[in-house]
Image (spheres, chains in turn brown, blue):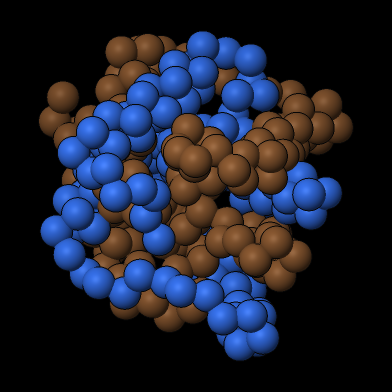
Length: 125
Length: 130
């Protein structure tokens, strides 16, 4: 619900949709006009992690997950969210929140392919 | 501007509190054939309940243009994103806030994610979506 509240906050105060992939990709897009608020949002996102580790629970990084897999997964996520116009937050939290059929289709597809690739990673490979 | 920072912090706390920032938990959620952990479904439902309640009045006061078309890039892009999500257990928000772990894994993921986004610009020079 905090995630939803944060999205409402950003839309209400800044008139922007809290799609993390869009905010990130926009950092590197032309023209660079609206970089400052994007950067601040991303800084806040990372600062929240530091605060969490400091005050709530220490970081518990995952061991044994190869960096090659991390790079491959990152490439797919970056490419896919850019082409598909959104991720779990943009299509999921925000898109579903305004009853967008386009976002509902996207969510159904990435949930399905996500479950499929997790199945392959955990039960086939 | 301060609102963007505050919203980012609140969003990030939400990711940690809910377990979304933990890729193991995300993969347990996506692993419907294994020991399925459906709890993140409640997280998603909670977040959408809030946006569904408040987005409508905000957008009524200040209308915005949203894309509606269900086209090939949407389907292919969402499909590719899901595959990457299911491999690593990271979607963009959790990966970025996990940079605070100060380990290589999220760093490599985020760098690759930025590269992937830039790569997608080559065939699609139309600019950012949504």
